[in-house]
Amino acid sequence: MPNLPLRLFRSRPWPEQEPTWRAAAPAVIGAALTRATSRPSGNWYTVCASREVSGDVPFGRVVAGREVVLWRGADGGLRAGPGVCPHLGAPLADGAVHRGEVVCRWHGLALGDKKFGSWCPYPAHDDGVLAWVRLDDVGDEEPLPAPVLPVRPAAGAIDAVTTVIGRCEPEDVVANRLDPWHGAWFHPYSFANLRVVDTPTDDEDRFLVEVTFKLAGRLGVPVVAAFTCPEPRTVVMHIVSGEGEGSVVETHATPLGLGPDGAPRTAVIEATVAHSSRRGFALARPAAPVIRPLMRWAAARLWRDDLAYAERRYAVRHKEVTLP
Image (cartoon, rainbow, N blue to C red; front, top):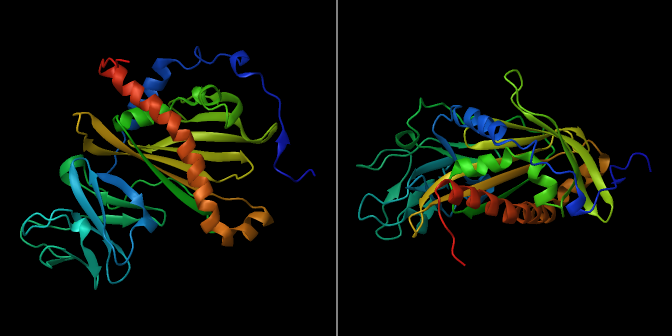
């Protein structure tokens, strides 16, 4: 049927693909990375999926070496603060939420929107998909009132958020995404016939990529995707042509801190916001709770390999030698 988004495609066997190493010039990737990391973040850090923060259980995560706790206020709005209780240092993430305040499990100290001794709430932002916290003493930038967010589809989209953690720094994750040439080589189970149409310029700082998303056998969905960086720790893929036009995949790299081995850990928090103008997509929206785990599985499958890329980049950059 002509209206179906699926297409039969042909592709060469993996070792016979057109090599992309000449086009994937380190200078091009490095320049794109430099421009991305020089953009302001306003000291905002992605913490988790918005739906991970409930009204009765606090959510805890270490961000840039700081223990952070998130919870819902009495109005349902997102709240954030230091994750260490100012009384005796208990982890507030182990407590509970009661009447819009986070209650320490050790001695029942309730903390909310007001400063208590050395404890002071952090600015928080819920964009409907992701939860953010602003850490001004870490970012050391001019604060912004809200995170720098990409354009997302209008109402009616299905979103899913996947989190994986790697032994690397945020720039290694961003560099991975600013190398679209590796797609069909490193992820042959997902991509075919990948071609980088345009590379970033001073006038238009984006990569434009033609690619077919594989589904089954020789069936796939061809699209054109644009990769941009709205802020230093985020790379966004917008589908600009083809099925799902307007859909986005946001890759956010959040520094966590140092692991037991003294090396940094970074959380890759990837939000997929899928949209389609097709009637079938609207009919499928009530099944979003079933669809989301499949979306998260697909993202985690790709990041199984892409974390190896990012971690290897970190190891090479720091001249680490891995022994067998």
